[in-house]
Length: 379
Ligand SMILES: Nc1ncnc2c1ncn2[C@@H]1O[C@H](COP(=O)(O)OP(=O)(O)O)[C@@H](O)[C@H]1O
Ligand SMILES: N[C@@H](CCC(=O)OP(=O)(O)O)C(=O)O
Image (cartoon, rainbow, N blue to C red; front, side, top):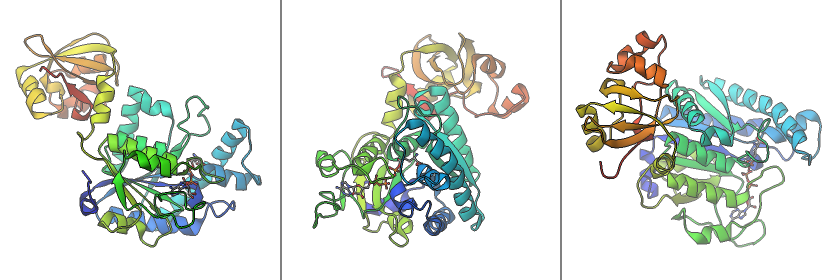
């Protein structure tokens, strides 16, 4: 866990968010030179063994230019149309920039439902993890084309924090047009001072970041601070920094004093997701497990593999909450199933290497991954 700048070099998985204020050349669409620079920095970070997910805004801004519109329209459907046009340009531009470094990119468009619904949550997680494992750079944005007002996350600072939570990232870097969080909005208050480091939950931060964002962006500093809090809930630190500072990513990850570091404070890592699971009330089925599986679940914090399951009760689907019952008949844990009841019945008691042969397709080796498993307090 990152508590100070000295912990930075140890972080392995980063989410980097680039905001509209930086990406767009003052209403003239995407600034491709800047994009090239960030792609080179992300490529260097990958080279040093880190995994990087980019959360990038800019779709609306690029869409406006492509459609010849001079300002952001007021109707939601027109903004959505602009975002669809611009998103194509955005991924095209990134793909071109990363090509130069021999890196593949992938477009991942998420909505709020994708993280609120358990099945979609697991799917989004698996896809992103697979992409990272393949060395691809996922480029995430909100799916503006279909996100209605009720379901939209609304700003990419929050989307980046959700991505951190989804992937258990170690850190979030929010690149913007200011060199960090200041004790007052520097555009309005001359002489405002940069905050070097602070607990992400410090209430004074929100007071300092009260203003709204620029013309093209949505969030302002407030949503960045809230995003840092959300990242802190899953144990990650956030750095908010000037995206145009030379070598900004390398300097942050090396531990230099640049931008504002918002630390997660104390508390168990991944508490947020486990709380989220524990808060689910709809248990859809259960599996009986053998004594060995019960022991490692209780004491070693391990995943539940099909080989440790002896019996499946009920009908449930991938992503549903399932109870784990010990040989003595006690419920010892609950977690999110990676397989439907029908599928798991076919692989009960089998080693994970046999899953593909038995089901006709491969999948996760675990029935419930330890990150998605909450052991009962009295187990
Ligand atoms: N305390 C603060 N420190 C720094 N910037 C602040 C603060 N309060 C408000 N802001 C404003 O937030 C803006 C950045 O937000 P925004 O325009 O949404 O950027 P982005 O497009 O990168 O998300 C800054 O340009 C600044 O005017
Ligand atoms: N999804 C929108 C970005 C909205 C947004 O959060 O912008 P910003 O606050 O500048 O990061 C787009 O691609 O235009």
